[in-house]
Image (cartoon, rainbow, N blue to C red; front, side, top):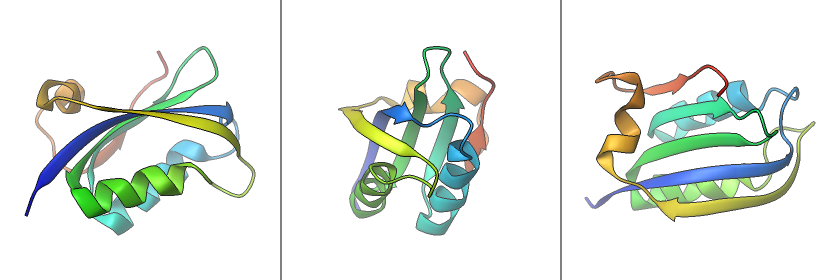
Amino acid sequence: MARTIKHLLVHGRVQGVGFRAWAQDTADRLGVEGWVRNRRGGEVEMVVAGSVQAVTAMAEACRQGPSFARVACVEERDAQEGELRVRGEERGFAGLPTI
């Protein structure tokens, strides 16, 4: 099974609406690993790794987000293994502090 890693930057009304908790729940359901955090500029940033199908599903889900979010756009680019490991060598999907 092919593995892919994507960096997602979600713009819009995405902070203060439960986006990070929603992202963690969605990632767990889809079986992807990675992390999510708020950015001081108002965006939500995440790195997601897993099967191409699961990562694509996560990116698509982020275009909607949780019910109170208003996603304007999602910037998506390929990422490297080093970006996935910002939080150490844990597996799973983690919430990180705001940067």
